[in-house]
Image (cartoon, rainbow, N blue to C red; front, side, top):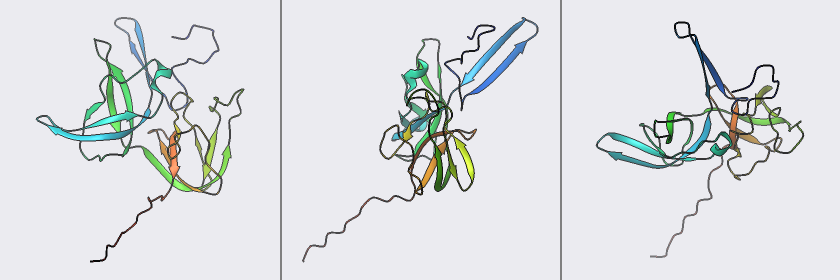
Length: 193
């Protein structure tokens, strides 16, 4: 928890983090809850006696928040393998981390007309970086949660004048992006019969 009078950023929050504060007047306590969103991809869809569930591969680096996924399964319907998802993480009384909430990411597709690259002290600092599509500004989530280019799997910025799909938190911060309308090369082989 940040100390009083300290102006350093609290490492567990940043752009894209939702902070909730609960005041209990009866007990004279204040509880601060930081909700961080992460990017994942559905690796399996299965069904058991409890219903349909998915297995999620984390694409964001959870270790930056001292988290990990001990349980990658989440009961939900309507997803297919390779779908991108946004999720939050919590831990139980055994301190096992699990997916607490899962949703489809907010998306925007269009031509990237501007990329204001990092203005921080290092290449890893992207807290002030944004992308413009159709005149609208979309800011990167903090460096702990952003996964950058989903096509290349690298921390690199989008290319100007290319169409991209941005994958975002519910609050509209970019977690990742991929080239839009990319379809795999498909071939048809006809054998002489």
